[in-house]
Image (cartoon, rainbow, N blue to C red; front, side):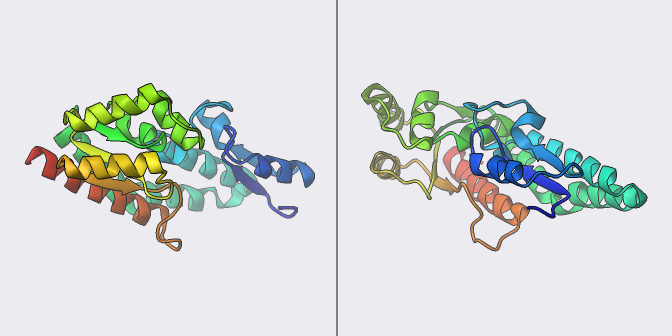
Length: 223
């Protein structure tokens, strides 16, 4: 960190250690990009900004601008890389988002935690799970009995077409709901908070998850 000209931290209360590390290694020439600040989310808001496609695009723009500020002589190269990332590397990612929104917009779904709350609006999906349940699971707290009853009823009555859960945080409550969904014939698919597999690129990781979700939606809706 001491020698870095550009530091990127998530912010929004997600990685306080990163900001402390930056502060412990001050540099007048370093540019610091805090994702939460860039996209207007303060501590206490949903920190999982990499699940919001608009925020992904905004950060690509900001990172490119930072590189050009640090190294203006190579601005044309950074602009070319920016175009390559958006129109090449991330094209399958953005295409899948558009396809799901066009084919399955309005479909009611359930989820285990708030990382899905970042993605569902971009996909046009109707996330029925109470926000307080999503937040409780994400923050490692016990959801209320009322929220658990609501989610259980949504599954039991097949109000949701697909259940999406974070396989890296399958608490007993979540695992019970996964089992209930499968028993009810509701397709279940997973997302994760961090890269899977560990060596995957962002686009590989996200495309795999979106493809699985699209398949679950197709199974649930018959098209």
